[in-house]
Image (cartoon, rainbow, N blue to C red; front, side):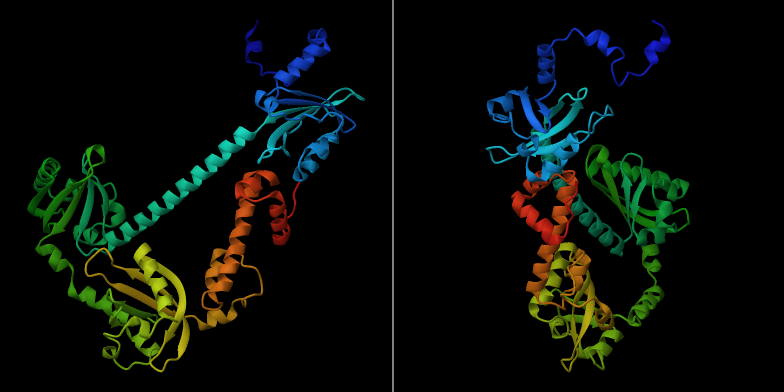
Amino acid sequence: MDASSHSSPPRSSFREAEKHLAGFDAQTVGRLLEQSSDIAVIIENGLIKDVAVGSDDLRKSGFASGWIGRPWIDTVSVDSRNKIELMLNLGDSSAPVRPRQVNHPSGGVRDVLMSYRTVHTQAPGPLIALGRDLREVSELQQRLVRAQQDIERDYARLRKAEARYKMVFEAVAEPIVIVTAEELLVESANRAASKIIGIDSERLDRADFPGLFSPRAARAVERMAAKALANGNATADKTELASGKKVDLTASVFGQGLDARLVIKIGGDGVASHKGDGDRAQLLRALEDLPDALIVTDDDLRILAANRAFLEMAHLSEEEHATGARLSQYLGRSSTDLNVLISALKTNGTARNFATVLRDRFNTEEQVEVSAVSTGVSRPSYFAFSVRIVTRRFSTAPQPGEELPKSADHLTNLVGRMPLKDIVRDSTTLIERLCIEAALKLTDDNRASAAEILGLSRQGLYSKLKRFGIDDKA
């Protein structure tokens, strides 16, 4: 045999079928069909003429008993009838036929999910349908979906934790650098550290940490790192940076083995002088002049500081008139409203675009949006609130009840403009529709499988499809 015959791709059909298969009798062909599929069905004019069940599981359950003589379309559920019609109407085409998934009602709780390929014999011969039992595949798919959902929930929690870590890491005033234990490469450096070192955070990423110091100091940094890895912590005083500034270093280890990291704190006289009262004063003036109201409170939600914009919104002449007062005196429709905001702060560390009302000293209310942050990692902890008037924005939004909510953002925008029970009702409607659309996409528009995943009856699913105006696709 030559090399070309070895490299040629396999044929899609037999080259000399009449020559090699002519000796097969009907019984042999029947056994072949039975053993090559879980079920083989012979159909003429839409009626089932014969059935062979190759699967032991299906045979023991009595599947397909009583099919002979019945229309094939009557053996499937309502949502699969259109697929049977498509397979019956393909004629005697020799083109490859795409397998189609259909559901057969059974005496048990679950339908039997079957994938059929059809083969048309020479006209006017019968149609042969070869089916494969997909129940195990369906179960594996559902387990995969549940596992994926668990992974996504865990990943979302990790992303939130990472976001809180980054926020706290950047907010810490003390310069901190995190370095890999083996190679002493910079893994993270907060804003304060990059200012002390004199290099932007982006350029510090994966930089050689000892290389940030003078040659003599670099050796001292390496000795400090080795000592910290051995004892858990170490220090290096009056260490000269490449810029000539001298700083004190304190290193501690967290993690073990290859995952170990060094947390290096930078201190000393150079750090203290770098903080600069002038820069801090400029920052405070900028915050004071912001057009949005800024409020800082303690753990008990008593106001510690407020900028000029808040005093104007609350019609207060001096900051002292607000200092010491409870935040609930000015913010929130009720104590419950404010508790929801604080609960989100304590859980996530931040809150964005929370719709509520601001009351001035004359008890006049205005619609506002609040974003807030918590410094709950320290004791005592504080809350900072940014308040923005949004009356005009609300006036241009669609009125409640005009249309069905289209997204979660749409629902959150209804807070403050609709009673809670109405928002909850619309939330349920939105969640139902999104879950149904996701289930249909997951099951390739198989209605029975989608109903099973959702825990609904088929009739219940059809009712909801009609309610939400979701087309019954083929």
